[in-house]
Image 1 (cartoon, rainbow, N blue to C red):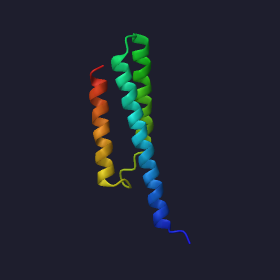
Image 2 (image 1 turned 120 degrees about the vertical axis):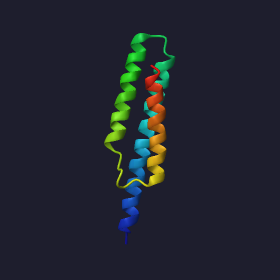
Image 3 (image 1 turned 45 degrees about the vertical axis):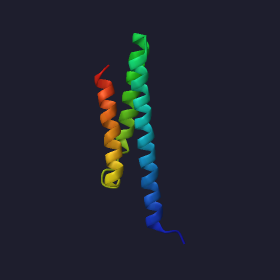
Image 4 (image 1 turned 45 degrees about the horizontal axis):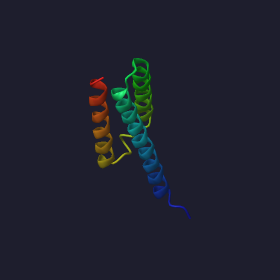
Length: 87
């Protein structure tokens, strides 16, 4: 018999991993934008960073993610914010 609570937690962990990877992707796009020599490429990468960020925020489960998970995501959001602010 499957344990409902274990399956529910596995789903939360999968959502967290997705959000975490989307924020990593957003950070990568922001870093690429910062190092690009082309205005067009910079703008495109900023747009891509923001799209990844918006996608991540749609799936943040504040009421289901653990405090440790939320702290990890908050660090990445802060890093992304600093990077975008420098552009």
